[in-house]
Length: 616
View: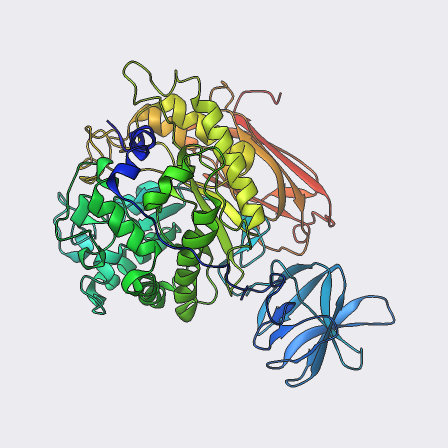
């Protein structure tokens, strides 16, 4: 029985909830918005929130918090930078345009929607976007459905989960004195990931490790986790910091939240194997207490996130913070499993809890993306209704939806594999579509942060191809077995036949996961796809060139695995190949430099095939 079997069993067990617990957490009215966008109707000072200047609305004034660079519309009918001193009165008015702009020293591009701020005398304007005002000094920022790096390129991640679920919740490593034979994460792993074009790790940093006793934070644990993240940075592997949990915590047979955070019914705390541990009376009570913020648990959770962000915020490879893994609704799960979903829970307790955590992160890190999640049932077909009342709040306006996709029946029912499950493909497709809708509703980018968890290569390849078609980043679950207490079976989640032997990559699984894909695109992607089943291993990428971006487009090409005899590239549009023949990172320059001569709006198409094959 694999990790992913949780979903079929969870669905079956949800019907028992009324027998195990009586009431769920109370809900309250939606809170007013505090993000950089229009506030909900009926909230005080509805309008735009100007960074450092409070709310402003049409006809209202605000003062610039510091000298910033706005734009003056000149006689040449173009916008040019114009300094706006501190204290200048600014007015809100309708507008729509695109600018290159500067705010507090951060340079990038911003699409301005519906509004701008202008100076009192009308001589200059400071653009403000209701949806996507962000600090472009962040290494990564959400822009519509995509993430962009500091140069403006759209970036994609193909990565793995690395979560050590047993105390002390940090993988043994040669960095911390473990022998090479016992080390689970060291330079060998960073090198292996980079060599196979895997450029991301979802790294588990567990609350139980951060705050083992109330208000006493473990600086050594955080230093260890930062050291692992830095190790990955040395090989240009990005890190998504993940506050992981399964079955609440070790007290209930899982991991994640510390034992002291578990408010159980009475004095008895039951332990049960995964996933039954979600449904014991004490586990349901613990989840209900969290959603009700009993004992200020949500505030404690937010405070530990402040500690994590303070340690991780200046990492050059930090792609953000995954607020909480697969939050379980407690007794509300009986409603969440219904076709209509559980709007009251998702847009109430679940959203408020994550907003508190985001606020805690922003105390220490105002820049990096925050990755939020739907309830656990969304991983296997449930609706994600976070933001159904008002979009999830983030004062940094830099949000990403972290979603998962698993089959419900395949691999669980005897004799039915995921490859042969007739519902499996539709479940995945539905999960991607529901994630797209939820991300758009909450003005967030999105990425698939868990899938796989098995040796079913057909299903793994199916999800990877779907992610290509959806232009979605992904993180396979899991890098290695790592004695996972919430998975049974022998090594089925792992990439390796033997976790101790880094040369034991499972060939078929590696063929499905090690793919040709764009890591960075100097413009806006239109489509890409990789066809590993074809003899020519064709890859094709099309994107709209942005000549303002001077950094190169980068495509990961697994030469040793898929192109041993080399590859041939064809480019149409204003871009040229700048990398060496058969390089594992194919690079292209476009727009400016090297004589490409491209302009805005030009479409570039890159096609790559095995050497000796014709383009078709």
